[in-house]
Structure formats: structure tokens, C-alpha cells
Image 1: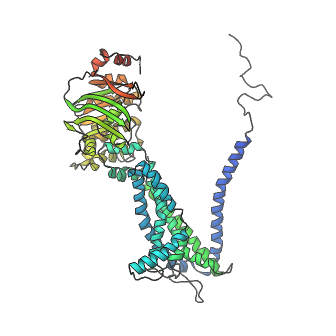
Image 2: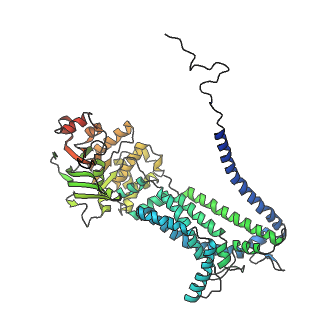
Image 3: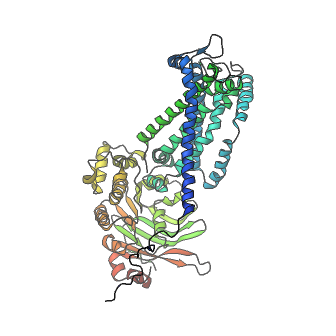
Length: 315
Length: 266
């Protein structure tokens, strides 16, 4: 039996062992540091925005009680007889959002189902980029399309509807069209990601394509589809340019789709154009509305996460 | 040389070619599948056995560019005939896949899916589910967790669930495409026992890479191989020999069958 040589054996003191690192790998450490700071930055920015919203809002709520703000039905921050009930803005946002979603959800999901389950791959390769171009049109273009064509030409001249220069319907419909590609594209990705084996298993049991889509693919892709709809809602709630141009500037409780109304974002855009003095109550009002907008979006996100947890069929 | 045994046929293939686009994957297969028998399709990779299997219940319709010529008839009716509904064909001729593919639903809903989509109106869905799971030898293992996700089952249990799901729509024929290739030997044995049990009520056609499996369960075995076209070099699947399993494994007529069976090729 031969004796073991020291080569490959335990390291002698002072010499690096065979398993110790051969280089300090500075590059890897640098990449790690860059990636970590990138992710920390997003958290910092979010926190910074929240602080920037909160500080003027706190100032605002020292002058206006929260209940007056949330439940008051008269919004007149710039009048001598000022009133800060935010409900008129909230109702206008609710109208435009609901109208937009009633366009974007059915058409967006319909487009996604068609592209993912029915369209020939070649057709899909052409259609999907075209759909995504819609998402690239600047919203100011949509805004004037809503104002000049939909509201003025379509509603007032052709259909002779009883409506003024602006309406939440025109703004909402066009905003819905704007959101279609967002919902279609993300839900199409989610549905395409469902394994082909699921569709084959369903077909082998005698299901037709619609049954397979509705009962197997759709539930399996639900978390992605809900994410798409939530993103659509967030875009509708936060969309500014279309509503600032086409929904109107009068802040009053909106009771019908053909009425005009000022949304939360519409108010912020309009007020920001004026000369609100920094630190004035009027100035702080902008941030209070902004904070409310932020919290509403957060609430929608939380609800959607709960919905996904409850109903999804993870594969 | 197709030595077709005499069978009481439920499915008959007559001069069947299967194409994917211009590529001919299977060439000129004629064979009959006997009722209440297990027929095994064996052969090396690329010999077209899975392709042939998928053309027997029109699953190949889902593949872009797939095309079948010749005749495949089920109980005497051409399944590619102009008035035939592929969905109805698949309800009568079910399929179990290589990799278990339960739906991301509860065990109960996996079984009830087929009856629901095909519009079956059982007097009791609960009874139908229990019957299917019992026939698939899975009932005792899952009866207390029917509402739990099928994804919580082991691979072998998932595959038996897929068999139960197929049984639930009461097909006449069950096609199995290498149903045990993703399973361990014990799960494989259970599926094999199950197949032998099921052939009392169903006709089973199984594609397998495992020759011992064919020898253990099949009444008849068909050996396929891939032939290269002399001019183009394209390989296409052909049926070499089809006979009782005993004959194929103990006294094959064709040299190529014997080489494959004895492990000298493939």
C-alpha cells in the first residue's frame, strides 16, 4: 500500500487550499451591488413619493376635517366660500373608470382569447404587435379624439344626444379603447403560458375549444388575467389627459353618463396649471387628492390579490 | 410484411398515411384493433407509433398541418368522414398522455369535467365520480380529499386520476401514449394491473418504449420501425409485424422484429 502524497491532500499552512477562491471576483461583487441598489431605489422612490404626498396632506387635514373631505358633496376649493367635499371628483372618476372598463375588459379579454386560443400563429404574430401600437398612442391624441370626434361629432351631431361640450361617457369610452391593448396583451401572455398538455387533456375528454378555454385555460391563467384587469383599473383611475380634455372641468356630483364632471386627476391637472401658492391651502388640496388617489389604487391592488388567492387554479 | 392477425375489430386502419405538412411521418399502415383487448405499439423512437395513436382519435387535428390519408374507421364508421364531429370521436375514444396532465382543479372536478362538458346528465355526479375513481383503483386513496387539488397527488396517482377522468366519460376505447414513462416501477406496476382489469370493459391501445411492459400486458403487439427514403433520406414510420404478443416475442417472423426484441437494435 503506497502512502498518500500531499498533492490534493490537506492544505499546508500558509498555502491556499485547493478549494479556496482563485480570484476575489470583484466583477461579481460590483454586479451584485448595482442590482441591489437598483431594487432599493424603487423602494426609496415609492417611499419618497408617499412622504411627499403625506406632508402637505397632513397640513391640509389640519384645516379641513377628514370627514368633511371624504363625505362632503361640494367641491369648491377656490371659492371665497371654500368647500372641500371630494365626492364630486370621486363620482366623476368612478363614472369614467366604470365606463372605460366596460369597454376594455370585454374587448381586451375577447382579443386575448382570440389571439391565444383561436388565431393561427401567423395571424397572431401580425395582430399582437398591431394591438400593442394602440398602447403607444399619446393620451393627448386620445383626449382630443374623445372631445372633437366622439363628443362633438358622434354624440351631438350624429346621434343628437342631449349633452354639453363635455361628457364622462366620451372620455370613458375612449379611455376604454386606450386600455384594451394593456388588458389584451397581458392576459394573452398569461393564457399562452398555460401548458399545451392542459388543452390536450381537455380535448381528449370531448371538450370543444370554447369549453377548454372557459373551463381550463381561463381559470389556470386567472392570476395573470386579474393582474391585467387591475392594471387596466389603475390606468383608468390614474389617467389624466383624456379626462382633463374631454370629461369637463366642473366639479359636481355626476348622476348620468352624458353629464360632464371633473375627475380627481382632472382636478389635479387643472389646478396645477393655475398659480396656487406653495404652502397655501389650495396647494395642499392637490396633495390630499393625490393621496386619496394613491390609497384607492392600493386598495384595488389588495382586493385583487385576495381575489386571485381565492379563485385561481395554479398549474 | 404485415401479418395482420384476425381480430374482432373496433378500430380499423386501412392504408393510413399521416403527414405533418409535407413530411410523411407514417406510411401505409393497415391494422385492426380487437375489442376488449390490449394492443401494444412498440418500436424505436421516430417510428411513428405515437403519431398513429394520435390519429386514431383525431388528436392530431390540434397539430397545425397534420393530415391523414387512407381510412380509419371506428365501429365501421370513417372517423375522418365529412359528417363526423372530432369532439364526438374523442368522447368515444379517450386518451391518456405520457406525462400526467391533471387540470389545476380539485380531484372531484377533474373527474366531473368530462361528464360536464360532454353534457352527460348522470343521476348522481357523486356516484359517477366514485365509480370512475374505483375503476381506476384510486378511490381508497383519495376518497377523503376529493375537494383537494389534484396537484397534491403523486405522479402515479395523477396518472391513475387521468385514467379515471377518461373512464368517467364512458368511452369505448382508451388510447395510452407511454402512460408509465414518467413513473417509478411500483406506480408502473399498478397502472399495468389496472390496464388488465380495464380491458374487460374497454379496448386499450398503448404505445410503449418498454418491451417488458408490452410483453406483460398486451394481447397483441405491433412492431414499427423507421425507414429512410432512398432518394430524399426522410425517415417514415412503417408497420413491420403485427401478431399476438406471444408470437412477436417468442417467434417473430421478421428479422428486424427479432433484432429489436432481443435488444440488438433500437
